[in-house]
Image (cartoon, rainbow, N blue to C red; front, side):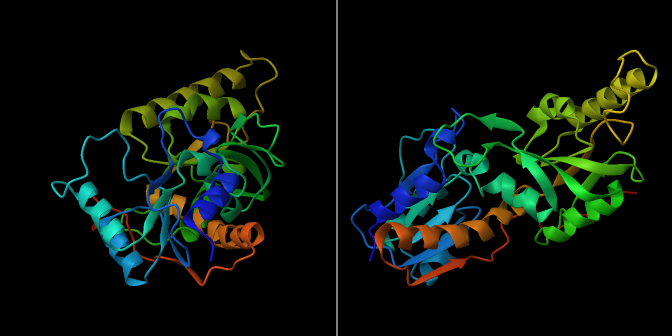
Length: 301
């Protein structure tokens, strides 16, 4: 059987750690590098329930998107849930490996999986990473076009249909009847990238965790710039956005949009492990537990 060390090498070939943002620390979090890996579980979040599910299937390795630790810690005791999770993993002989922003930017990573699920073609990274070793374009987010333009409302319904069910659902900002052709996608928290999205000329921006003030300001600025173009103040730019009001916004549940990556990971990881080691995993499984934090959504008014 392949060892954890061999599997980690495969994972970090598929999702290179050099693609990670400077503040991020993905990779192997828990595990004995000499231990064999027979069964692998996949999930977005390493919550306590997910850990229990992985141990119930006797997984030797749990691959998650979100980190267990976002910041440095000084103890992993049983005094907080993260320390308890580390203890459970070690007692259960289950390793934990995280592909976070490195998986966001990788080929067949989180952003590409979402863009493919929404039907985008002619894709390129929203923020490219120059990597001479990469055989395909890599980088944060994706920009692409729809083969057949559709209204914002119709496209938003396509996005919602591609996502696993959550109580939060999908929110849409913009003219619902506007024609959508080009799309920018950034799974995860994306309101820091409004300027980049505005300059790429997309008709709609699909992301998560949009806050009131940045989203409102972005829509107002986009519409204002569109009015300037329409008045000819920005010559030659009047037809930059087919919606006539700059990119609309589609706000998706964070874990839901990122979970779309797991369908590619479950194809690519076992195949790459077998190719690299000559050994086939006994089992690999996506843990179907919904880790979205919201249990109820109530419309106001």
